[in-house]
Length: 531
Image (tube, rainbow, N blue to C red):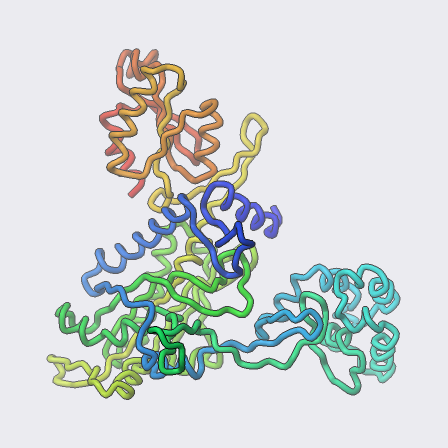
C-alpha cells in the first residue's frame, strides 16, 4: 500500500470510528487543533498511564508533579524563551501563505507541480528539457503553480537557463533548477526560493516567536502579559527545590510531568503530528555534574524499551546522535528517537543532556539558591539535567500508524484491523450475545459484561450478524471478543468440555482463532493477556 494512501486511510478511520476529530469542525475547524473522541481519548489515556506508571510507579528515583499552564512571565525571560524561542518564517509574495523557512524544500518535494517537472532536469547529465518545460508551463502549470516565474513569463526564464547552459556551466542540482524556474531575471536577482504551494517568490526568512500570548487580569497592557507554556519542563526546574525538600530524594532523581503545551506553529501539518496544542511527557532527571553522559545513554536504552512495550518495533525507531552543530547551545549530548511514519521518518522524542543551564539560569534570575549539597562528597553544586522529552500526541499517532493493517481473509474480503498492544487498546473486550432476539442469551451476555466492566474497558454490541460485530471490533483494535451462544446455556456439544455449561467463545483479534473459556476463568485470563 502506498504510504500516502495508508495515511489517508488512517485519517479517515480516525474520524469514522471516533478516535480523532478536527476541532470546531462544524465551524470549519481551526488549523493545528484536534479533539480526541471516545476511543481516541481512551487510547491517549492508556498511553499516558503506561508512561506514568513506567516513570513514577516502577521506579523509586522519579516523582511526579503537575505544574500550571500559565507561569510568571519572568520564568520565560530567564529560560530564554521570550528572546529566542522562535522559528524562521517566510511568506509567499503571490499567495500570501506563511511557511517555516527550514521546511520549504521538504514541502516542495511533496507538491504535485514540483513532482510533475522533477524529471525535466537530469541530475546525472545536468540537462534541462526546455521543450517539455515550456509545454507544462503553458498547460498544467497555469493551474498547478500560477505564481511560478516560469509559468508567468516562460520565455524570459527559459532564456536565462539557456544562457547558463551556453556559458559551459550547467545547473548543478535540482534545487538550483527550481530556483531558476522561480526567478524572472536570475542574473539580476540571484536564486529565488519558490513557494511550495503556488511557485511564487518567498520573502527572506525572519524570526517568529512561537509562544502564545495572553493577559492576566482585567487590564490588557504590557504589565498583564503572560504566556501559555511552550513546554512543561520549566515548571519542574523552578519547583526543583520544593520537590527535593518534600520528597526527600537524593541525586540522581527525576521529576516527571504530563501536560498541555502550546506553540504557535507557522505551518501545522501531517495530521496531529505538528499541532499548536499538544501534550508532552517529560522527565527532568537531576544528576551530579560528572554523570550526565552516562545517564543520557541509560535513558536512551530505557526509552527504546518503553516504545517497544507500547507497540513500536525497534527496527522502526531510528536513533539520531545529533551533531554538535544541530544541538541546542546548552546541550552536550542529544539523541533524537525517530519513527517511520507513513509521511516520513520524524522525531518522537528527544533525550538531551542539558547540563546545569536551566537551574543555573533560574538561580541567576530569581536570586534563589538552587544548589544541591552532596553529603558523601561534602560538595555543593548545581545539578546537571538529562531530559527525556516525548510527545504524547506524536506517540499516539505512531501507535495508530503501526497498528493499522489491512489483510485479505478467507472469504476474499479485506479486513481492516488495528493491532494495538492489549495494554494500550482503548477497548479490551467486546461482549456479544449470539442473537439479540433471544432474551436468555442477552441476559447472560449482560452478566458477562457486568463481570468484566469493573476490571477493564468493555463494549457491549448486539447489532447485526456476529461476523460484522467482529469486524467492527477489529477496526477499533479490540484484542478480544466474548460471545455468549447456545452452548453457554445448554453445555458444550463436543470435545473435552462436552456438557460443560457457562462457557463462552473467546475470539482473538490478530489470529481470529476461537476457544471455549469458562465464564469464571474469563477475568483472570483476560487480565493476564492485557497486562
